[in-house]
Image 1 (cartoon, helix red, strand yellow):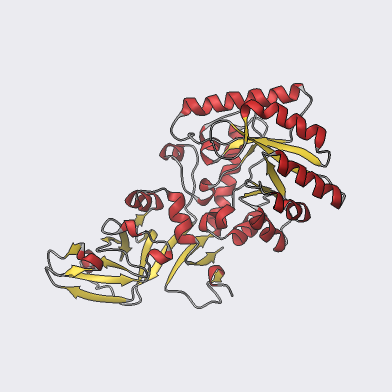
Image 2 (image 1 turned 30 degrees about the horizontal axis):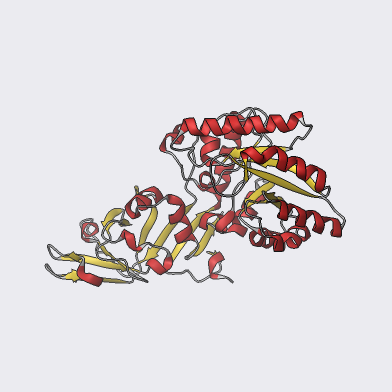
Length: 390
């Protein structure tokens, strides 16, 4: 069995692992569906984003759990991810956010994936492959209203869509969408995007070009922007129980899906004045007890967390001391010994999650590392063994 998809009942337990709570995932999916119903006047539902191994949670297992919840549409990054889902015999609709290479057109058609189209060369390649196969395929058109990444420039949107309509008869114009780069930081800019995107959709409707799906709401967009235009939302980070903005906790209750744990592999006393780890960036001011945990930057625990982070031992927040190394971190567990029990080899430490009423959140880890929660989830989830609970 692949170490990335361990079943706790049948596999040897790894010394460091991600616990994935599939019940929490199902709960979050239900809450986000309710939020979509509230914030969109005629919702078609939500399209959970499960790209990048479902933000480190494991794409296939997350897809399986969402299927059991009745999920009918997924968003992934590229054809490789979509083909993996088809190889696992999932029948849901799959939107590819990133599909610009002509060489991928044949696979996209063969595996019945729904590509994003924002270039004529790719559109013609898809149309040709669909024609050769004797089918029509649905596509979504991406309009760039401010992200500056992939998409048809908003000034060229009408001409582009009309060209597809006339020259690509084997493409079904199923969806149109845009993306918000500042939804969490610049409300006026985002509202301006919404207005301009709405004008494009209405202009196309005046040319008798309509779409089944009109969407723009990522997690932040879904949570904080109401619309009578959008009918599909594509939440990512909130599906996994993480809020892109603290204020959203007032609007929807979510549960973290991932926690990270490790077994202590060594305990020793460090005398006052001794240095710890490479470079001796930490020196003990008193005699302290330290524990070694088998996680390091090779496992996605970022080196920038050196001398900044905390983990939980015996429900006590204990600091990471010295530099994070490739395979281990060293933790000052002196405070944990005050509980009357000295931590020992084999004891469980919590790197991210809860223990005995205390917690270390992904947002805290991201802050210590000067990054975002998305990177922490992907870094840890995609390099550690995953243990699933349902």
